[in-house]
Image 1 (cartoon, rainbow, N blue to C red):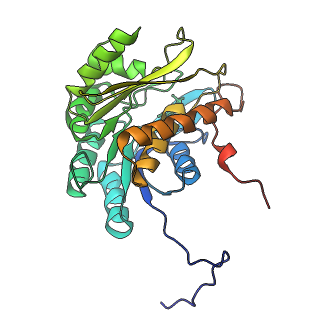
Image 2 (cartoon, rainbow, N blue to C red):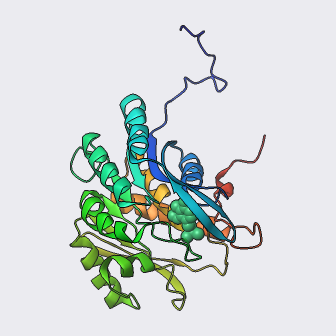
Image 3 (cartoon, rainbow, N blue to C red):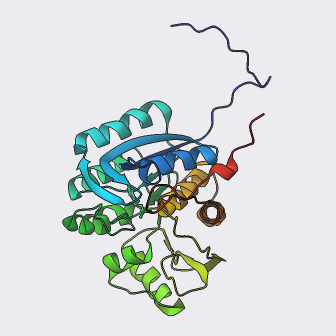
Length: 287
Ligand code: PLP
């Protein structure tokens, strides 16, 4: 098919943005999962692509259940976009089952996605449960996250509940935060970001970024809001977008943290439960 040449509305030739792939679950409420990842990718200036792993039935009050996508369909989505459009950075979110985790890990290897020089960076957000406590991962799949995904990750971004599930370390202060980072690094990722947002008694929100040599506390404000649905997904996908744009891990994490802070500050109530964090502030006012 031949297309007529386009006259760019801007007077400039259209530029293809960098691309980011999310391998994650759908949130019917639109605040977390694939939906949060796509709006974050858009807000951070990259083209978002998806491999859906599960379809959740949820709203602001919680997750009523989910259906897993067959593992071969998950990997087919990854392969078809990577083969045609290319992937500059990838992230995983809700992966639901050990079978899905295993096939995502081997497909990532085939596609050159994962830690290592010259490869496409991979951010692993080890999603285990919703903030309401609803499970998003089968119990037997935790081990697959540890053994299949962590060794392949450029960066892992667990919250404190996920840290405890994965390592047994209960983070309460700076020392235990560092012990948690070391326990996570033993599982093989290049970098870890231990997120302190769930340590409610801390008046600041301190995340620790570590690679075994450097240990950097990233401090930010703690906002008084209950509307933080999708916060973890939004941070991980903002970091992924900045990796896709060519930043290194410390710079991408620093930018991602500033992005999520603003999204939490501008979160909004929606429904009778927990509302979503919001990247609306990034949109230019309508002309
Ligand atoms: N639903 C899906 C599909 C998710 O991926 C996640 C988190 O990663 C959630 C729900 C839970 O989000 P939250 O813990 O912010 O409520």
